[in-house]
Image (cartoon, rainbow, N blue to C red; front, top):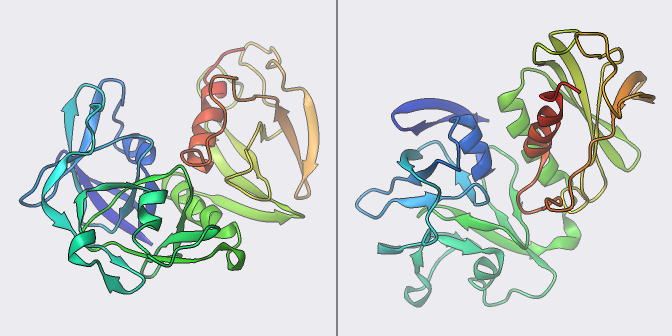
Amino acid sequence: MHTVIHVAGNRFDTSRGLVAGAAIYNLADVDSARQHLLLELADDRDIPLRVDDQIIINGRERFSISEGPCPADDNPCLRKPLSPVVNEQELSPDKLLHQAKLTFEQLAALDPDFESGDGVFVELKDVPDAQITPGMRVLVQDDDRFYTSPCGNVGFNTKLEADLDLLRARCSTVARIDDGTRSLVIVRALELPAHWNRTTTDILFHAPQGYPLAAMDMFWVTPGLALADGRSPQNADQIEMYAGEAWQRFSWHYPPGHRWNPATDGLLSHLRFARMRLGQAN
């Protein structure tokens, strides 16, 4: 389910639901090292959105752009407290939110009956509900709705399907194929830089069982991809079969200083990770 958000007066099409701040920066082509986004709140303070924050996009959101990276004090006190709905109940006066950003633990604490092992979920209309996992921090808006539930009844597909929707909002053709305990995600006709021997390629990712807690790694492309001068790309000489197709494997791994983070990483960030490698002429 698609909707429109506004960034600095410009309209952008995106998917409704729980969205990583990094996806909005990427959508609006904002460099987080030089500028930061602010969620505009009517009659209240604007709230900085970090790339590693999550936000529930409903289609009413308006963002402005401020110079410089996101400030350290990115969760200011609000003039008017927020009252999202939790388990079909409005918050009692003593639990009203005086800051807009809440961690998983703070959201869980809004339910007095929350038990260890329970999950926290975003209740969404017309799109799949999304799970908030430990390590996430959510920029909450006044009419957001949450509920808690034992996680034993919920599989990992909720997060995967939500991330597939984000990926489909950026790429024209995306397919998911179940392959045993993992899912194969294929993006068709991804555009390539000029230093390759063709202009587009299909690209394949493996989403392992337990995604996103289980990390993604490497990527695969349509065989025959070489540099424009005829050289073979480094660490990309293996051909493997998936979903009845041959794929050329790029052994491209996250460096020790940037391990996979299930709170912030997903299909979109892994696509950017793969495109970083494809941006290299070696």
